[in-house]
Image (tube, rainbow, N blue to C red; front, side):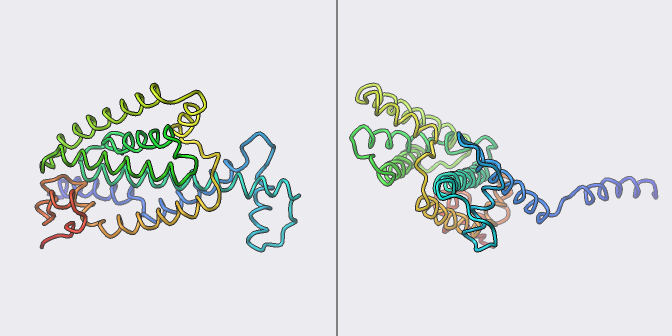
Length: 267
């Protein structure tokens, strides 16, 4: 009896010791993020090291550091820092969207590309560029948003009310391939060499045009999305254990996937 109790208690104790507090993981990730931002800010054609980056940032925050030459300071603060911060924000939103989609579909491979949303955004952005309406970042962003909404709406239409995991993933793949083919057709039929080059750089995720206004706009969007996801954290946690478990906890599976307002437990 004593041996059995000791054997049962041993794995439990080991699991408790192995469990890492959430704040430790958060602090560690924050440190890694700050270090990566610092390293990335010094990467480029001109030799800018971490000390120069610290000086440029320190001057903006009123620290007692020696200011850099105007040209070098402008290079760091107006070019390098906005690009690095925008890349970090975009990466954070991709991580959040992937986590939410994986939880809702129960598929660890689910992401915006798998469900066709990204391909829809790319297709409409290509169309906007080919038509000459994508001369500004707002034009491209608006076209991409419209394409994402169109592809998502088409996927919902094809699902016909069925919200099973396998059907969602397969339908998303079909919609994604459709919009990917449409984007290729637009490029081959209507784009010249310069337009094709612009489209290719945009599809690869170029951040050369990043400025502080883009960073502020993206940061505001990140805050809104994070608050929305945080408010539905209970339903998303339930989905991570599977549809049956979520239903047993009082979560309306179909209503949660279609309408976020219905994601709160019924019990």
